[in-house]
Length: 124
Image (cartoon, rainbow, N blue to C red; front, side):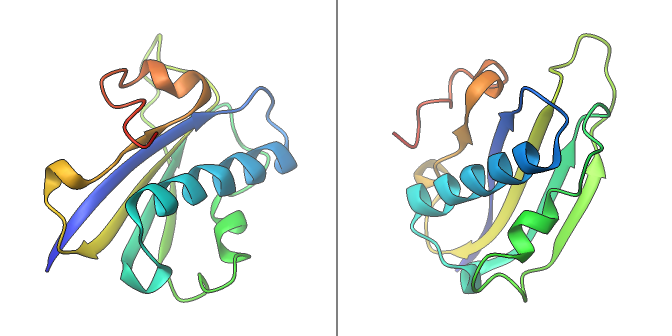
């Protein structure tokens, strides 16, 4: 078994709590579905947001999901690089799996598809 990182990102239109929480849940659901993993398989989730998203902690959304109460979560700010994608939420889901790196499906939604167009449609 290996510990693999699954990347994901999405954007929101507004710095509003409900929008951030919903986008986080949707992104995580897509990552979990495409990679066929369960919370028990996940060692931790790193969550970053751009500096313009401060209405809530995205981890709040994940903590409210059934079965996710014991998964370690950490929120942080993304490096504020000039010209970077605004209003962006990124996840790094570290999962214990027998899958190879090439079998991992990364998920990029909404405006975040521009971050990795080569990976944006992997899960579909």
